[in-house]
Length: 119
Length: 110
Image (spheres, helix red, strand yellow):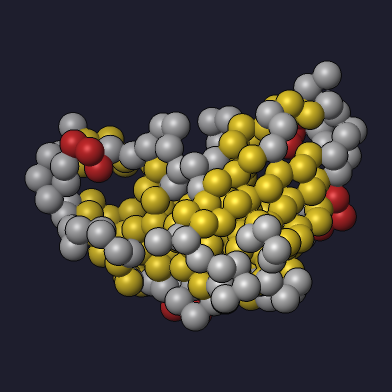
């Protein structure tokens, strides 16, 4: 059973880089699937951030592409998100999830982690 | 820029049926958008209900069904229960690995 857990700083200063990691258990990240990041600003809807395959192939939300980097570390069975030049608008709960290209399904999800951008 | 549309809110009586929709500001939703539906309660991660238009995720009761109705994707809940009161989000595949969520529907059961 695949399980995902997000981790990273809960507070980031404006203009700095937001860095999060998603640890995957119960499944080898190299075995297949893609891996996705989402976010949800307080009281708002969900936003797809981007998706990565263990080969390094990535797909990014065009609205974030210029500030975004998603990478995978197969040795640690983790994948990561880096978003630079953050502002208060990047304050959100960030979720990671498994993505199957064959079924087009995002499932399961991690529990999410709140990142606040503030000085 | 195409926006994914959902009803902001909807209400249903216990035991009743409700259909939530997911549309596009430009064009029609089809199976090629692989519509997915998620249920979310406050403080919780989204739960996958439906993917690829009409396939129920594991453990989802058959009270939940997905379809294409006219030019929109639809989520129908029959026999509504109190714990169906949640936010429901659809997401559509726009091609080239790109997904866009609707703004969500707040469903009230009363």
